[in-house]
Length: 294
Image 1 (cartoon, rainbow, N blue to C red):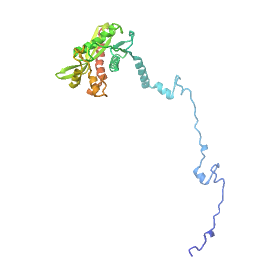
Image 2 (image 1 turned 180 degrees about the vertical axis):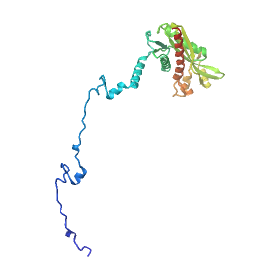
Image 3 (image 1 turned 180 degrees about the horizontal axis):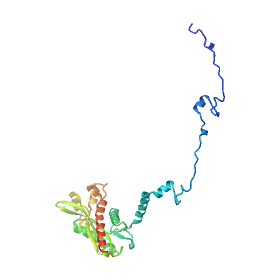
Image 4 (image 1 turned 30 degrees about the vertical axis):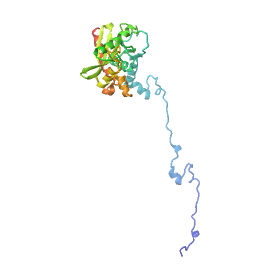
């Protein structure tokens, strides 16, 4: 009763196979393949490509395309020209062992009495900013004052003696323009010491001598006392300052501090930037003096 008619008694529908209808590669398929692929991919046209040698040739007299854009872009041409001029403008020689005269022939020729980057680079950048075309050379030379000068007189003596020793050694011409920088500390306010840089420019050829000071950076008095206590009583240069510098004192307590440039930790401004600001004024004043003599 539940299965009155066996499954095998149901008639099986007839199936007819059409090879063209079921062949996906047929040129005129029908059925499911015709619906999925109404138009063969091979029937799509291929776009034609034409090569224009003049359009793609950067040496063409009338280029177009990407090369034409480069050649006709005035902003890009200006940037390239300025970069080229900048490379030709700044000529820097850093060699403390150089024993030859600096050859004339450039607009401004400056010698710095130090081969250290912290002094040479800001002088070069400042004079380049003002004059545009500058040749700079750094030559390391010592002064006859203590490593840590104390007082304005010691700062002046240190900067002046570096220039005198440089000329005495016949490393530069006697009329060469020289810039010298000597950092020193001074008690500007009772029990308050500051670090300053004495900046001296000497140009015997044009009879120009300029004196400037860098920004004053406060120095904690305990560091000054430590430098004083570590200087022997019979130290020959004690008249001019201490045997140990403030930077060395700081470096001994804070190894990460650069003894040559501890100013940034104290004031937020690096020693290089401090010297640059003063030397930019120095270069401007020097240019004004030169213009008056013309």
